Structures are given as C-alpha cells and as structure tokens.
Length: 310
Image (tube, rainbow, N blue to C red):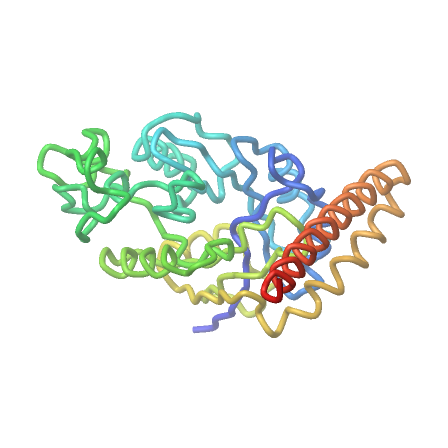
C-alpha cells in the first residue's frame, strides 16, 4: 500500500489569541517556507482565525486543519479538526466528548504544568483509572488537596473512562517546557496508557513555529498533495506519529531565525505601513528592554567583582 509522511505543527497561536502576536497569513507563509505540510492555529477559546487559516492553507501548499485551545474546568485541551468552538469551562471529559461529536481529535497540551493551565493527571479520563492517578503515583502537584477521588464526570461507576471521554493523543513534547521534566512525564503517561504522542511548538511568535513538530504516516496516499485534513486526524488516532522536538531543530534552525525576520518585514510591507510601524515599535521596545536588563546585569557583575578587592 502507498504511504506518505507529512510534518505538522498542531499547536500554534495567532494574533487572535490574547497572547499571540502574528497574523495567520504570515504564519502560513512561514510554515510553508520551513518545510511544514500543515500548521494548526489553536488560539485560546476563539476559532475565527483558525477557520480562515484552514480555508486559505491550500494557497500556501499546506493542508488546512482548523482547531482551538479550549479552557476547560480542569485545564487546557486542544480540539483539532473542529469548526465550532466547544463551550469553555466544562469538565474535561465532557469537552472531549463534544470534540468527538464534531469528528475532531482531542489532544492534551503541556500536561501537568499547572502554571500554564495544564490538566492534572487525575483529571485525564483513562480506561480503568478507578483511582484517577493515570497509572502513576501522585507527585507534588497531585498530592494533598489534589489527591481526591476522580471527578464523577471523568469516570463511570466501574472506574473506567466514560464512553467518548478518552483523549486521542498527548502532547509529549512541548517546545516551551524548559526543564524537560514535564515532557518526560507526559511521555511516560502516554506510553502507560497507549496514547499516541505528538510534538508541537506552542508558538506565540513567528520564529518559534515548527520548533517542535509531528511527523505522521498517511496510508493510501501517493503524495502530500493528496492528503486531507481527515487523513491527518485518522493518522493521529491510529498513532502513526513520530515526534521531533528539540530546542532548535537543526534542519530548520537557520530558516527559523533568519527567514522569520525577512518574512515579517515583507509581510508588513505588503499589508500596510501602519501595522508594520506597530510591529517595529514592539520589536524596538523589546530590544531596548533587553539592552537595559543586560546593562543592569553588567553593572551588578562589575560591582561584585570590584567588591572582592575592597
């Protein structure tokens, strides 16, 4: 049977997200240039720009896949392949079911990192997880007050995950988890419960798009051009995934940092001086702030050095 491999970044934020910075057209242009086959815009609790990105992706030679990062009652959840925003603030398992009703896949992003609204391990519905621990002993984040019985919406009376409540994949490499501990824990969790693992950049700025990505094996297709969004969703569910997550993927590094600056300048030149000026001011202010911090650090180090001879 014929097969093809596609590379996707399934977790990227645009300027439509409260913490995003880039327009979707620029993200799509950049993704195509660095060799991705798809990028999923997953803004926080809004889906308008993601749908637009999915509709125009083909113009950039990309596979169009809409998505959103939903704020559930228990933490964030990626809804990939949906065209309607699931209600925010609902229990994790209920949100998973709503995603499945739309034919989408539910992916756990940056799991267990509570500072970024990652879900606690006990709140991820898993088969047979009667104690809600997800197969591991509680740690510092799931002990004490968090070591309660699982929510009744997450498991049924027999202790198994409620029908339709299981997630489809776990983000086992998020490029913004600096120490690597949470990524390693996510990998262990996914392996324990047989969930496919994906890697994603969680990019909020252009130069980080594709910093981590997922390769998917698509069965029954001769070329990437034949691959549809449904093919990608099916591959995620089947677990034909390979993660590529490094601080700066070597084969993309140069295009990331050099290309991003040029593409940003070109985009704003085409779309208007006003937006370009605002972007330039933000960049300049950021550079001045960084320079100020560096200067203060230099003064502090100099004073400490001189104090040794006082």
